[in-house]
Length: 227
Image (cartoon, rainbow, N blue to C red):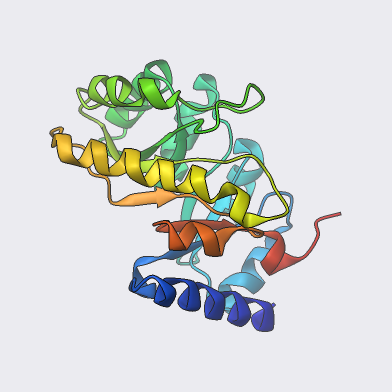
């Protein structure tokens, strides 16, 4: 794992350098869905500190088992409103908020815990029927509504473009998300920052970095094929 991780970090630095970005401004989110607790411990030993989980129940078990380790947990899967209370208790950043209803529930739960919950707005940049996310055209009105909630803070945007073996084919989607982020930033909506762009996975993270990603969600390239 350490060898694979070192190679990935080298690729992250190279991608950042190609577009004159500071590699330190890009964080690797290690995707640990379906992996046992020991694999996460091994990843921490290898130097990883930020972990992304897709399923609430699985994440709760890992959170309890690894509570003594310096881990920042990110939720990167589809979040149902009835699981919002668990998400607020555990996760530092929720990448996948795509509706006012979900944001309102997160706000309600965060208020109970006297917490300001950091979130990203998931944008369905390619308008794929099979994927969650706000429509690009509706993202700004949604952010304006969510910005009124006192216990959630929008930190940026997230997307999952269509899969393609050739990363160059998805570059336009990453570029579109960066353009949307810049547009939102220019509006100066109170309480909203566009500091984070969560985009790019094992097969296309270098292109995502070249287009402005600050969070890359990588699992297979670190841990190998889960099957």
